[in-house]
Length: 77
Length: 249
Image: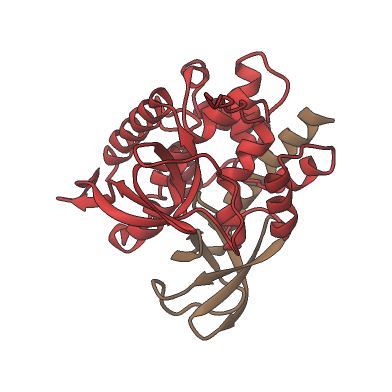
């Protein structure tokens, strides 16, 4: 997506990683990050991984994003 | 005999959203796995209840649309005025700041956040930032150092504008200012001529366009023709949020 967010790497094929976002698998280039493996969290924007993230930090940010989505859900039901 | 030209109809909000969301979704950067269906809706200018669940999968945009709507007393996040505010910019943005979204969320989070996460939240809620698409494009997390490497991505992610120079089949030749990093700051460079896509397999969402028109561009996809007022608004909100982003670079 156009905003930059964390995501967990589900699998890696060469220099391309795959993350789950918006309910679909999305490809991200890993050319700008070093030493990442499956299960790591990366911060990415529109198909480009920008940085490797500490797992606790990533989970905390994802929890914030989940709060936002939950707030929206409650607002629409 | 004088041929009467029918004025263009206002674009419904959901259809305008498709214009901007189509290409990043086609590239599988956002939204669900429904690209062909979304494209067909756009081609047919069709809005029905089946479209909304597809649009709601754009989880990056929806919070901002809802915030803009709520703070302007509107109930529909896909109201045309709301969608225009988010992608292009209009007066609705003046009544709302992006930080309202995060302030709301922080009150819901009972646990203590780590310093880094709090930094992340605060970076998303820069004072004065409006919930405009280009705000969160320029707002790259402060821990990311290689901003030069992300410049191309940011330039494609932002909604930009260009003036049509010529038609070239499925493409338009457009003069557009690229995003540059000069002396460590983000700025728009001098206009350059690019080829921007308006059709895929001979079909496209934008029909009436001619040399001299302003168009909006997202991921090198021509989204729609802009009125001079819309172009000025997009330029203004882009410049404003570039300035905000540069404060933290």
